[in-house]
Image 1 (cartoon, helix red, strand yellow):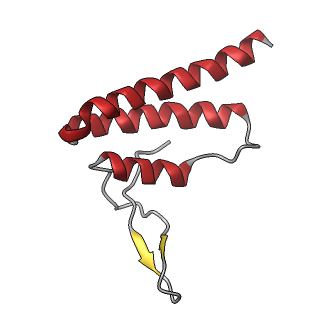
Image 2 (cartoon, helix red, strand yellow):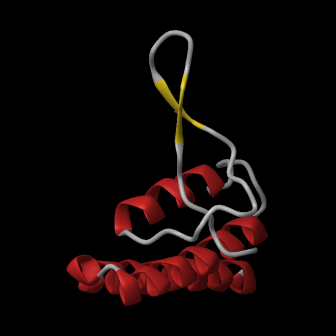
Length: 99
């Protein structure tokens, strides 16, 4: 997966705010909240193949590790989340190999 792009809301006619599609030239997330929003939009569907989930969790770990370097107020939380995402990917891999 390519590096994540920042989340930018777009106003709708109804006055609500919905996420717009991410663009290639958007900057990578600089805060933990931006990382959450970006990853939320990239999350696979529950019915997707395990390989898609493994890729997503590994990508999420990379995103959180990168955010830990720039969002110093949330460094430790981002590091913990990166570790959790790696563990999730490994758990799926273990289930696939033990079957």
